[in-house]
Image (cartoon, rainbow, N blue to C red; front, side, top):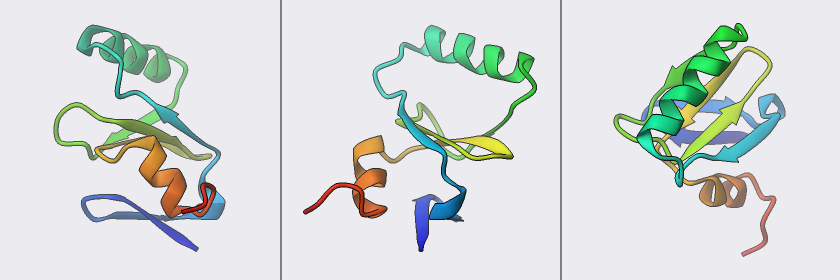
Length: 81
């Protein structure tokens, strides 16, 4: 099954390790979070076009999405309608 993350980004649900809610983070906290992840050697792909609402972790990278973590989990079928 595939999951649309926003924009033109679609990934296989098998690639998803974790979906984290970053919507409530302040801009400063988000920038510190990104710096910490980059320092740890993790690639960050930002498709949010502004402040992201969720971070999707895969083996290769972390994708920042404009779609909320709740919506992504619902789309992936983890939350019943």
